[in-house]
Length: 467
Image (tube, helix red, strand yellow):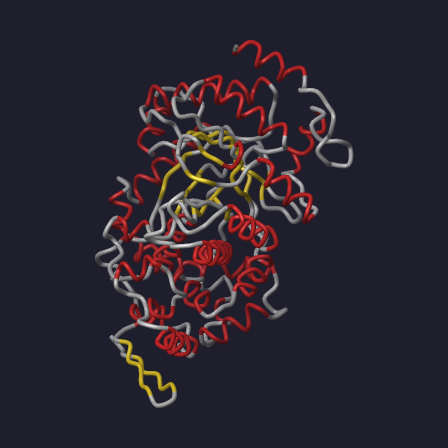
């Protein structure tokens, strides 16, 4: 393992290996401090960033942070790079240092089409490294250039489009409570990314019950969207075997094999689930059937980080997601808690990093702009991150009544927040979903939220039936 030295004034800093260099170059966050891998002070952090900026990108193809012999995620990362490097144009940047790579990403040469072609060959560690020496505005500008489109029953990720996951969770999975939240969200134009429920009772019969309910609503009103019950992948497989109407397969994933083991999964299981969902042929405009959620700190919380900093672990999780052509990838940025992202400043930075890294690696990235009540953050911090991500071209966010998820007990974004961002930036829902909203009288002919209109008659009938 090579060592790295950096002279700053009269002081010499020594970094034992690439893993330590990456960790100490990371912007300050509580999770890295908890893991004992963070820089001791800002001076050491700047020295590490200066050293990292001079590191050739080729170093990441030669020095694996975690051996491929002991970690299937590392092996996958190497396989993806080997498969794509010759056809992606990687040779045009292979000679660059991390600092040169940053400058190239910010240049006009790195157009949307060039970045899309390059994405399959980029290694997560390369992308994590360059993010560590970028300012927030750099992350936003490059993220905006990365356009990633995915399809199932509608088309997500197009330019000037912005989607929401309608999240009608209920602490007892009560059908009336879920339906009330669901119709409330639809009336604000939410739900084009997915109508997704986190079940309070995570067992197969309950999963099938919720899937059936969502499928009936989507079919009854001919809504061009998809549903998902965010249960463990094995439950979804069991539901498929029992004939349930499964649109998307959900799973939380991490950036090391040990993290995924803690989630009860491996790459083989994810491949099995993807094939099972594809076999149902439920998509109408595409066949992206996977929905993944990630979050900085998950590897540390599982004691599965192997000394790798949490942001690099997060980027490695995107290699797992990329393998399965997902419809949605969601960084649940502030959900794990202040042990990993202490305050609003750290949450904002992490959200921008995650979006940038995911998009640069070719993923349809969304963000759950969120925090827990014991973090040093508030809704104003979330407004800042929401607005920045909207400008960065984020594919989707969450839509929850009042921004308060009463089942998961955390604070996120509301239907009103999505409406604010669309109005502010001139964004629209997925095109198929927008046409449906206009047909239902929820949006007017100009694509704006209709005002003063009564609840559409089909929705009135549905709520009366549920009562």
